[in-house]
Image (cartoon, rainbow over all chains, first blue to last red; front, side, top):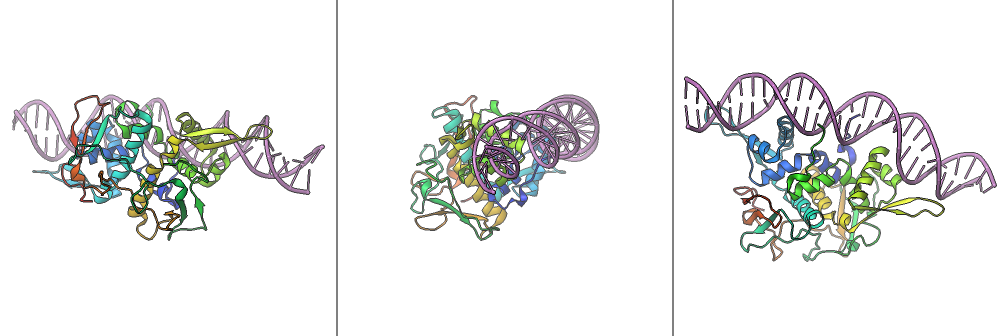
Length: 165
Length: 165
DNA sequence: CAAATAGGTTGCGTAACAAAACCAAATTGA
DNA sequence: TCAATTTGGTTTTGTTACGCAACCTATTTG
């Protein structure tokens, strides 16, 4: 039956994976965040095959994550630009990068570093914070049905201390 | 030639997708964060087929994101538990959820809500912050080669204002 | 105006995935 | 205590997604 889609799952994580879950999609968004705009640049920087790139770009435009802009002088020549919706994926990309830096590469072996140009220092790690801005323990985090909830769901993260963070 | 793997790409985002990029993997981690531990619970809660679930769990155990613990009384019966490496994926899951809540479901239609049990309020959105804890503009964010960099790479996010955030 | 580049499309082969059937061991319930 | 059910899978079969190479037209560069 081919791949199952998550659209009917009534879970925000599933929804985002339905939109972003294809293999190349998030890497294309990463490239776009780095400033890549043209088809051939994406192709070269990622080493992706043309047909897959064409499909993914089309999908990203349909999802309004990228915008296809004609910048040709005497005909058509395209740029793919991030929309606000697309640029907002930076927290997703950055959380993936930070996780991998911590657990796959390890401290001191990061291939790239994201810095604050005003200080030259790497930006601090993303973390679940409370309203005062302090990193939170998972013990104080619970999941509740939201306004768009279907069944009576009331669960709690991790039963016990998943991490002490 | 089947699917290309990103392992040789020297990019942290690509690395994490190589580990997490399969369709069901992050949803399994989400379930684990919610407290699901047994094979049959994952199966029922996700609606995933058994063979794929078995493969994904095996892979997650190999990657040390889950740990397989024998909890049988008179034989073998297993629990899958998050390791610290796995629990640290919460920022990835949460950034996906928040993005989808903002852009797919929309304000006021979230299927679930993640709250601080001490206040009862939803946790604040994840954001790229500077050392003072203030949300940053992308104009002040740059990407530099890290200690594990291969070529001379020096790029900057988005050329221009991707967002003003 | 020729050559190179951009931006694709098409066809073909392989790998990943889904559903259903099947199965042995452990657990539950009467 | 023993039958029924649940757990935790494996196998088989078919479909879909992906990768590669070849090809093509329009645009831009020299």
